[in-house]
Image (tube, rainbow, N blue to C red; front, side, top):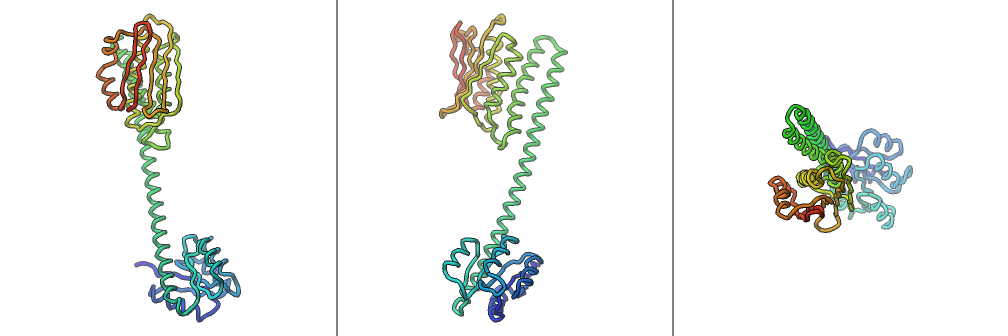
Length: 339
């Protein structure tokens, strides 16, 4: 059963208080109306517990109605306040309503229907506003909870990827050289995914990630591991590239495959060279370019080497067009254009 409404009726004139009480009782039978005609009673009633409505005169012998309004809103911002007064003017009314007063009704027999409507509307609006605030608070708490769960899941995925990488590395020590190479490449792919996953966890929005940071780390890690001392890395990014997670993951793997391919095949006999990774984000279709100054390939060799099923599959998933340019002795450029 809902609790009865608690309303403060503030006026020096007992007859005017009775007029207000009559309207309140007609609107809400069983209402608890507290009559206030001095400062001590007002302060005690206000501090006892929140009121559902305050109805006050403007010109009180012991206070100003504006001070009543300010004190009420300061303690209970959601409490509606209606001013029922025979003093003041339109300028005061406009100023008070701009400050947050719910309504300003002039004392007059002809205004009694308006007073009743004003009281009802003030309470209904306040009730709706409070319900909306509570719902917003609930939704905010729910969103924060979901965000916490999502971050925990991303964190666990990253940890699981790192555990798989460690297991693959351990296993690679117990097999022949060919199998070891395959296992290490699989571990590298896991690392590429883990790098994207790590940046997802650090991002404000868990459905998007700055791919440029992941790309930079993938290129640096592969160059240090595969390229060794004889290959230098140049990264030329014109800005960050924010992508949806579902697109960043396959694009990260695609870049890993292409950078790995360049480091393994562009410089035979450990020749010195330079690998350049470019990122252009300003155009309608951002591009990633992987450029080596190595041996280059014949056109049919390029098609055979880079047109693998894995690269094609990852390019389709990342919504990227793969363009390759290469000549013997003149290096290779692979462009990934996001479409």
